[in-house]
Image 1 (cartoon, rainbow, N blue to C red):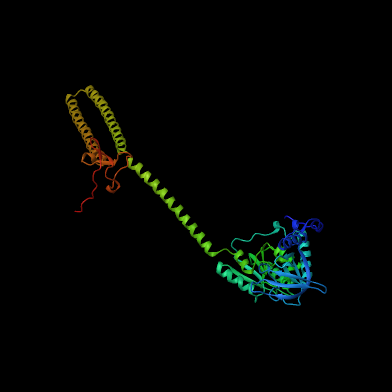
Image 2 (cartoon, rainbow, N blue to C red):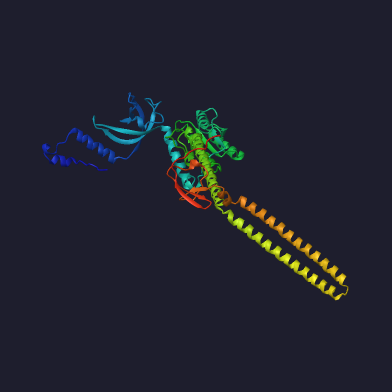
Length: 463
């Protein structure tokens, strides 16, 4: 920031007409000198000439036995004792010295106002804060993460205060399924610190909460002093349950805020932090369910597509190959049967020849003639049996052939039917609604195939 310095000797050395400045400029330079030259300070004095105009700003004087100082406490900086402030109060004011340029009045721009007794507490607060920070109780690496969705929340606070009502109201609004347990304790006075410590130890011993809120409403530094107690700070630091500190208003800070795993600006803010918004979770669940449904539908579509592809392959398989295999097997069986019959006839012929030779070696002609006649009959019966067997096998062969021909697609084509498919892709057409006018098709008939273009599509007439 730029500073301005005016030397009186310089002004005396120049002519008034050459170095004269306006009152506004002088006040402006004086204001800069004060603001740049004096750091923010604490000033103790008695309140007098207190004024509260409609703007909400507060104007007063701080005085002692020998002097007084004008002070301005603007509405945006007010907190703490502003409501009950009155003439005669002994206060500590913290702020920056400045000048009200319009009137040239020297004043203190107040940023913080405390009762004189609070000054001692403030020094004790800073000393304990420094001590615990040196021990590492405020370090980020020792702070616990809050659970994303706690099942039960513990609340260490007064059971009759406004803080517990605010917390419960927000919990019921944001996520009513989460339950809360109140560990009652005093939150103000000399007996409050040991009770707060006992409530924390009870919550640890019962081990029934996923997160712990330590809370009370707003108030003065004295009202909040129980949460600046070293015993309370160490109990919070040693708590294995994640702790959220929600003490006072957003502008209030206590030692408990620094030691806790997370600080909330208000009790309601603590409830907002520890549980998610039920509406957002339901929306997330809806989106997740929709994704699962989409993935399932895609999986079924892929399975259906695979099934269609396998069905297409099955339809495209040529039954003629099966018929050819069956025909080859039948021919093989026929050859085996003919070879067996020939072998049997050959053996029988050998037997006959042997018998004839034996007969010829015997003398009686009649006996020989009888044997010859018997052999002739046997030969005839053998030939008849062979012919009948061949005839029966031939009949069976024709029956099997006719059966195979009856199931052959080629026979269906011979009866005047045709197989129609898309000319480009070869996909079979079984439904007229899948074809559009102008599409090129290919029709296979008994003696070949035809290529054509669709000119009209109609439906079968009902009989």
